[in-house]
Image (cartoon, rainbow, N blue to C red):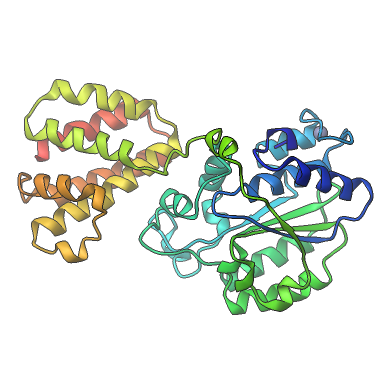
Length: 349
Ligand SMILES: [Zn+2]
């Protein structure tokens, strides 16, 4: 990301560039942002700027091989840590110790789509939206491992930590020494919404940069987050269920076309969302509404559908979605996968 593409305060951009030019950049910077305040965008632009091979005194070039890899978030010297938790997507063997690496593809898609997403958007995207994320000691170990490796090709090895306030004590303690004496050429970029929750010893090792709140005009120009409102997924799923109940095969066609044209990560998100929705339907049908964790915007629809769905549907539908998830993982033809899913749902209702 170039500074020119960051929606945010122009003076802060100039200050950051001047710090790099005058070699006054600290090895650890702590950005404080409001939720969705653009901290990640500033951090990405700074990481790219310090490493760009042809940077000017106003921005990175955006076209050199380094910029190219930074813009796709795939540069080998660009590392991320962010709050996670165990989810369905993580292999059984890793369940007890989920780390950011397990969710890197989803993270990249989310950031590339819109670096101004909210904490909840991340949790929804990685399928842990009923739990809150944290940064554990396993993550700290991974960070240390990575930073002790020699940098591949960049000037700086960039370690970005989003919401470092989600680090637990053990993790923070483990990272302290590294923050105090980082390996040469390491740049820590922490983006926090609550720096006061960080250990004072961590805070004192970082240079604090405040991100000014966005103007109304800047807010208006923010891109939309795909997973901010799962209404799209809800409409697709309930459309399939309604068509199934009415046995209208033709109504399912448009929906499976839409599903099969979506990107792979979105398809996975849709399946995971659908599984959560179906579990809520099941619990509601069993009179367990109080533990179904239904969102207010879903309530009416869930009650209505739960009263009309045949009891045998839920279990079979969940395994159909599991099968669809495996098919997406193994790159099976998308049209066939979703045609099969739609047909099965129709059959089970
Ligand atoms: Zn460049």
